[in-house]
Amino acid sequence: MDYETVRLVHQSAVLVSVAGFAVRGAASLSGAAWVHGRIARSLPHLIDTVLFASALVLIGLRDGEQLRETWLLVKLLALLAYIGLGGITLRRGLPRMLRKGAFAGALVTVAWMASVAITKNPQGFLAW
Image 1 (cartoon, one colour):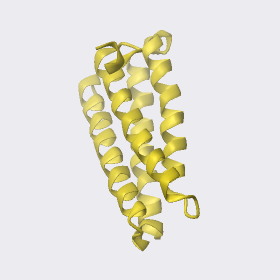
Image 2 (image 1 turned 30 degrees about the horizontal axis):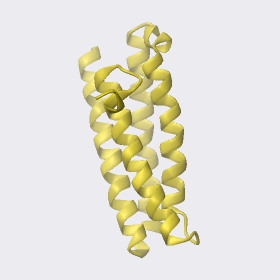
Image 3 (image 1 turned 180 degrees about the horizontal axis):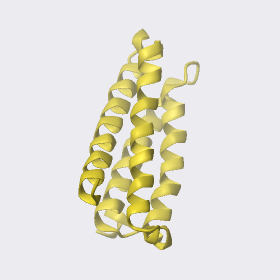
Image 4 (image 1 turned 120 degrees about the vertical axis):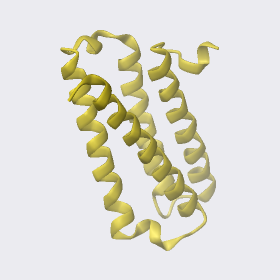
């Protein structure tokens, strides 16, 4: 596969993953039981596997040159924050206000990550 095709797969997986999280997060906050069902818990792992694999292929197609770029390191660190906030959002038993704050934080974080990826600037939309 060529770089542009893999990038399209990666970008599509990002959109599906984030949309799925947004739907699951909103449903979880509204008390929907399906959020904790097998399919709702398993499908994101499949999508995120495609996302991660496509990221590795993109790096490989560029001979790892992106690994030296600050914007990518910043984006990967933000990914850890997004995963943590997403986990808090979907965890049962935590206070609803904490989960709502984590949900908002996760969505802002992923929007900022996208702006970093688009601009190749570690500040992303914060630079505006």
